[in-house]
Length: 157
Image (cartoon, rainbow, N blue to C red):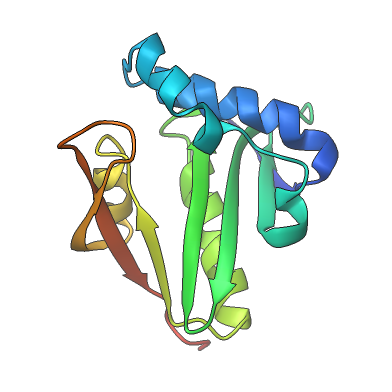
């Protein structure tokens, strides 16, 4: 991918972002039954744009290829979503979105970002400074837990 642009998400993006969530999750080989079970958490509602900061990564044609959603409760920011279209994995889209969200969180007075990571994405977050601080039990799969990660947000230089 040659160039991406980041922009604020709008309620009009909700259906596109929902489709992206399902595409990104399906990429990891999860069954349709699991995807159906995660429907509530993978569905992006227009109301979420009033509650959360949403940023979209767009390719040179303006198509959304990734997005991130953040909530703030200083000193902690919670990464609610970060999904990248599988067609552009390993091109810097996820890194750009995470960096953008961390900067927004820093400007909002947060010193750490926390998230529940899909096990397939944990290595990505660890490469960018994520440290495992615990586990969060899955609401869908009995006996499964998600890695709970924290990333320190550096102060402004």
